[in-house]
Length: 378
Image 1 (tube, rainbow, N blue to C red):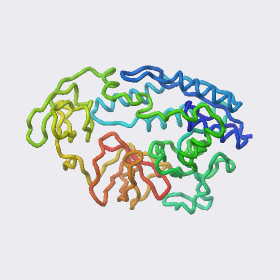
Image 2: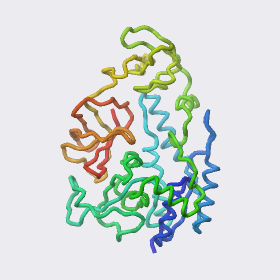
Image 3: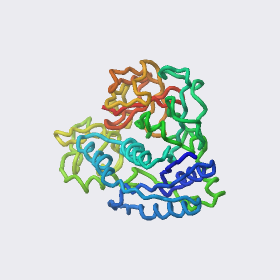
């Protein structure tokens, strides 16, 4: 019998994922990852409530629940990463690094060391296996990938795996998973990949799961809906500077630090009424923030992106060519020209100018339904 350790956050998605695995006949154990237990300004950390939901769900399903304290690694690999990136003037995506280093890094390593065959989560994504006839899977079409898995297993994970977009296009989370790596794909199940969010809610209600009507969490994983600036002020001392009109060069107001602002930001600028201003740039050395009334300012548009720190799910960069690119979760998939520069860097050229992406964010590359990987915007 296949042993599966399923990450249970206390939410509806992971609860249904666990239920489907139990119903499929696997030997299932639940796992609550205690990653962050500290309150931030404007939000009380819900970890205790989430753990209580996970425990109640485990009892309902008749499975054991283990609690893993990953706070030290989470602080180092996710929280410190976020703070350091903002201090450098970039706008990071900590959820992506949480998946890379914690959920499909430390959690996976722990599960395999404890004798589990697979880990599973409530992410909306699918795993497919490349056909045995493929020597290398660069450019493999969807037709050449084996049928995606729900909660079942298709034999030992011998052939390479691909990360595929979920059936529910709006909930698809492959953007956050592009840094998983082949080893993680070989040992991961995504039971919700072929379901819609509506179906998942219905399945939770039908099974009487405690989280059936629990609202989804919002915002950054450990900050929730609290303003990111309030969180950063817990770690970074104020550094007063000027907010400057990019067209007139007039000083419009003051700020507590250029690092607190991101490209395209409209709210929280603290500059006078009338038409809204948008952040169109910042000078970290001078500690100045530049704004404009024009939401379509040239500084907010781009025809090209440079990527660094790239990672590819096949282990090697795709060949140059035309691919689909996503620059934000639920963002439109845009057909673009892709040019690799070795394995760790690449250039993306859009067919038409797109909304500029802040440095530190990710751009993810797709070949049809297949997520190939991506990189960090330089």
